[in-house]
Length: 429
Image (tube, rainbow, N blue to C red; front, side):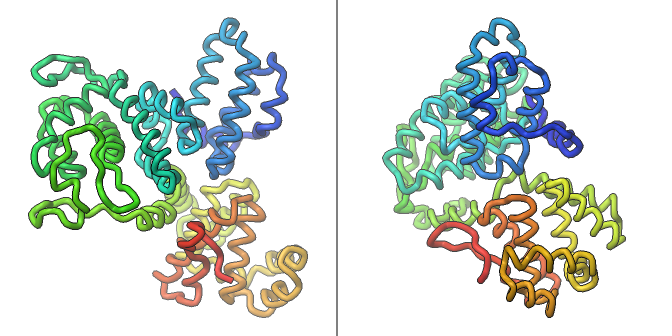
């Protein structure tokens, strides 16, 4: 099982070059068996900078599949290495779920659902992203949803160490059996979605036999399952899927009975915006961990924080750079750096004219802490130095603007924004 956290920590000091899709497509079959090549591919696959966009992840996945197709003989010569490559395929498929085929999606939910938690893959976030990507193609989404539900119900991965009782029959603790038990216990009037899930998790005798981490895994599984059982359509209504659906659940959720303690499900546009602002949950967790580490390492010393920021940029460590930027914004360090660091100013005035024009560089020289100068510096670091796509960089810019606002620096409030029409983040112009 992939220990993604450990691999990413090792990545911070690794000197191995990342594997590109082009290299994978051309790699000689015999090199697939080399430990160093596998290690390079492993570090590439879990690198958040590389997999920031699911399109890039899908390109790496396609190239890996091509390479493994050519290297089928490896399965006989080195079965352990072959299985390790197959594990990478699963990891990449989860990370670009909206782009895999329905058949591959069914296999993921049937055979590899419990792979996600130790691999730091947030299934609920992946499911929501899948829904957003398909929301304007409802017929395709219905087909996709049907095969995923089929995969979930047929899942025989074990969740728990004890047998469970479903409909008076003692059965193994397979994921499919947990879902059958959940369906059996949540088909009464008024039971649906969050309320049904909370009630089941709190009252089921089967659930009481799980350890805390197993219970949390089950909660994530049930939340994903509910999303496919009761999909929110473009009209805002809940559709039946072959399960027993309470009558009031077939009305718009805002019209539910007054006594129902279930919050309304946001409409499609709200979900789009919420998902966009949230970003990759795993990435946000990495940023939070990096921020905690930086706080311990630099304390309240602004010089140490600035040095850590420059080191992170130099290493092209996305999570650490964003964490350092947030701390700089919280502590007023970013403005001080731009105003007082003469070496940084000379460097920026050397490279910015070619990138942003002489007028922008002159504006920075005259007012290095003006909103436009601060925004341009953040944009330069995230896009030019780290290579983030504009939308992802601007997403980070929105959060930095929020931090400035909390400090009362309202002149930096609107560095970037979410454009509803294009469904992407953009820099303020």
